[in-house]
Image (cartoon, rainbow, N blue to C red; front, side):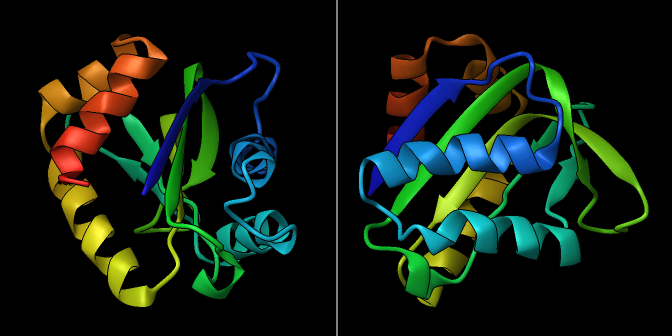
Length: 149
């Protein structure tokens, strides 16, 4: 499993650009096929992935079909001002997401397993705060440690 962590350019304000940015890091490493990014954006239009956590932090978990993934990976991009995503529970509601975990997982079993673990971690305010405030390498190490990968 590969974990990539980057800070978003502050000019990026749309979920499409955030997914393009997070996906470009995966594509650069050859972890996904070129079609993955557009599939991810199209999926987000139909099935939004934004979550508003109890602590008020917005997190999005965009992803696409596992058949477009070459190597299991997560590309986390962080935004200090937030990027607007539709809410998973109600596509008509919007949430400003500071953390965008682009999940590129090669099997549906792996996808479900990682999703369950991430949802548990998202409930942990300390984990979320560290993901926001630590440097990229520390955040990468934290995710690897917490996901036991």
